[in-house]
Image (cartoon, rainbow, N blue to C red):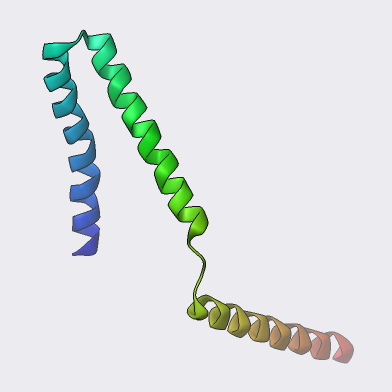
Length: 86
């Protein structure tokens, strides 16, 4: 269901841009309508990047990294034992 929601959102975004383009085209020329939509999308991208930079991984990420590091250490120890036997 989430995948379908993502697909619908991915389809809705360009369709929304197209609708805004046709609405602005009635007021401005095609070039200015496209430029305004591009500028709005650029500003939206900058805002999303700023939000993403502020987001920090939670405790779950720390736990996942700790488990991964422990698994890597165990694999390295096993590999060393096998190498010592050879």
